[in-house]
Image 1 (cartoon, rainbow, N blue to C red):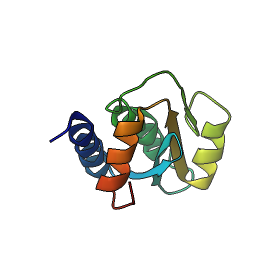
Image 2: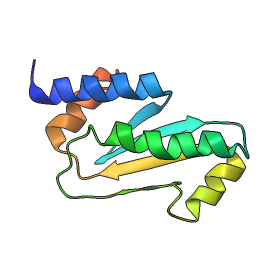
Image 3: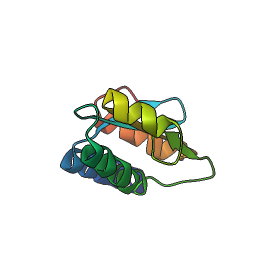
Image 4: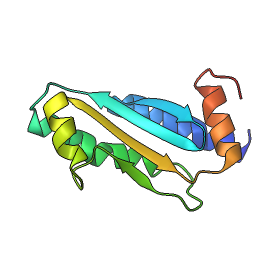
Length: 106
């Protein structure tokens, strides 16, 4: 098994374990979870656990952004009940492996 495939499997397993969905966009990985709008505890859970999922992705530059508590997006997430965190800068082999393991064309 390649290193990229092993990393992709670990990310998918952690995301499922923590209740997040994953999406692979061109050069971006997105984690998402919905919760009851206004539920501060659920938002706090998302805000801490999404980083745990993304920390398993190999970073080669890039950044992390979304509806986290460090921005005005956190207010939007809390009111809407929809939390999203994106990460850019992952290697192309990892992104291909992740997409393939998620059932998309590599």
